[in-house]
Image 1: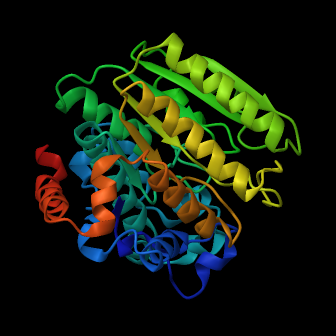
Image 2: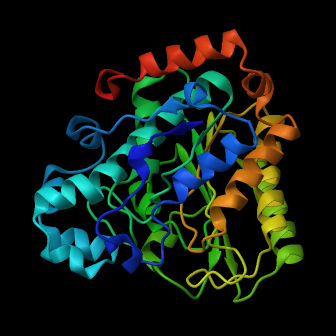
Length: 339
């Protein structure tokens, strides 16, 4: 499990001007600690992605745009950010997002090594190589996959399973004509971003109606996840596990119960792990205070079912071998740009 306290965005209450709970990542970790699933020394500490890392996908021109506060205000949908000095925006808004992006890149390598990895943040699926939006400033999903393709032997095919309530137009634009990447996307057809061009990259498109509920949703997820993994044999599954499908979410427009979200995550992990395909999960959108508890409950469920593997069972016991593994992992990723 990859995390850093740097993920959380807090600055003079500005974070409250966006419906996103900008502290949900820390709350997930606290719930997992309360349940004694993890402890501080068993979390892989995310490292901030450097410019060199980001340039694997992003253009220099795009990164330079982020030096303008009004651009960041538009991307994050927090208008007052436009009036802050950019050094403050870099430190209080973009650094947390860069750290989550570094966490996704790290989790990709960990997933290949260990069979699974969960970045408690990340999932910025509206950002492409040259354009941000929808609270997404860095293309962490694209970056994680590109890092694996370029720097990890034996990884040459990836499947993205995007189950956030919104269409993942960022990674879709980035992998539009790349036969190495298969994209399944299930989303509310009526909401942001409605990117018709990006939809051309989706190999398995599941467009949902307003108010879709558990039974229909889980049947579609099961059918299409199984179909996607039968149709294309990947070396890694990147699972964008947005919780904005939750009933009552102000932006998602769907009506999935907390239990439905837990079952959804279980279906994805079971499908990938039964085929021996490593899975990287990122948490993406979710705009209610209770989403942190649901994410934690889902991780606890995956652990209880054995879908996080023997190493995770050892984690609960604080086994020396896992301590060693985590220390090694942290060392491996102390400088992302060298990997």
